[in-house]
Length: 224
Image 1 (cartoon, rainbow, N blue to C red):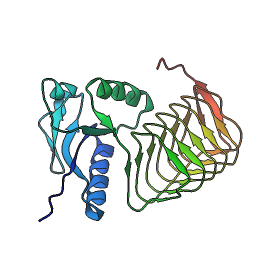
Image 2 (cartoon, rainbow, N blue to C red):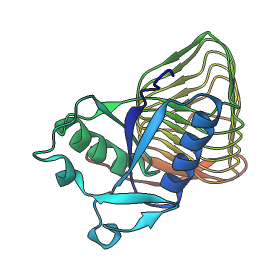
Image 3 (cartoon, helix red, strand yellow):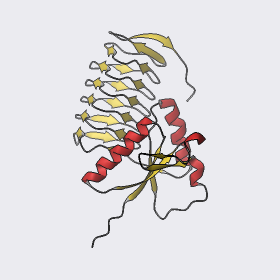
């Protein structure tokens, strides 16, 4: 009998999206057994010792101190806030965790997509051609990403976003539910695009933009 060796995985975070990512892992395994999900890592001690949909909250990153594993332990950061992600990813790297990509089996993605690592691409997404996705990006449910789009590190894209061709989304942006971005737009780093916005002109960095058409309503500074 052939023995199947599964790769060990922990999910960073213990919120609603982390539970959705656990479901994503189950769907991957239903097609091809790949992952042994050990559980969740969470910084909030209130969650430690809980079980979420059958998987334990193992503790914080201290769980890995003085623990030896025979093979690498992989991880993704299932926390929506880009600013929170950057700090949690740093802690995971310090613990020696290895980052991986989790891509739902239903995703339609051409072979001309460049992927970094630590990315989570949820069910129902369509990613076309000559797209570049860097590292630690979340693409939530049912988004479309057109040709020649560039998305930099730590970006979160919420459900139903439609991103047209030749768009560039810079580091740390948060793209809200059902946002539409027309072709050729640049979104400046660490900007937030509010739910339902239609982006028809470039968005400067460090701002929140909302509305149809989207306009900046405030500016902020993030020390990342």
